[in-house]
Amino acid sequence: LPYSTGWEDQFQSLCKYQHKYNTTNVPLSYGKLGVWVKKQREARKHQLIHGYEYDMTGKCTSTLTLERIEKLDSINFLWQGHDYTWEEHYQHLLSYKKEYGHVRVSQKYDVPKKYPKLGLWLTVQRSEGRKSEQKNGDESRLTKEKYDLLQRAGVEWDPLLSQFQSRVEELRQYQSEHGTLRVKSVHKSLYSWVRRMTKEYELYIDVIENEKEVGGERKRSLLWDDVRRQMLDDLGFREELLGA
Image (cartoon, helix red, strand yellow):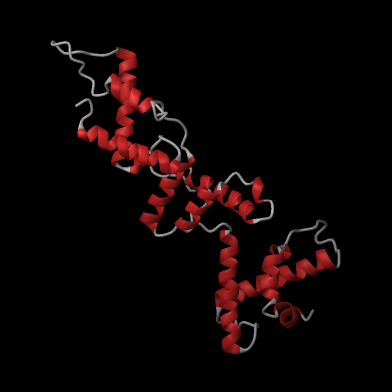
């Protein structure tokens, strides 16, 4: 047989990987297939440097035969590794989720030998994902397929907004239990957050509605964002805490 069962099985796995991710550049972290791809590249590199080697009977000693090279070439196999592709970063993200139980990766997170530049990559994906959700979605470089893959992985497109939503829900529960948005200081974390939002809302009113100069410059408030402000308005935040 021209192909051993082991080699052929890995080749078929590579074909399936290519069909799913549109690349043959399998990351080493992908497991057996990633290791196998690396070995094919190393074998080919050795051949290009030293040529084909033969035993005393004239049989080629390389496991990477000409037939196998042609077979890999037929699926546009990448003989040289290059910078991490989207698919490689995505696999790193899934590995990260398996290890830590979430995909809330900070922008500066970078573990070169394990999760290289994963934080920066995910930050870019979030930015492109937000574009996809807006009216100008056509301007996003993130395809629907990739968007769906990230969505299934549990990516939050705006993690800061998700945190804000959690706080609003916490305040809603407090309001339901106590009949007011005036959080007592005994609830330290929520109390501090409500105080901060009150100040930011006052800043919004001064700068945007009353067109005042604050500290000599028009400082930006978190609540300039209509979505966040509306969440608070739905609770009656402005009426109760600002009297406006």
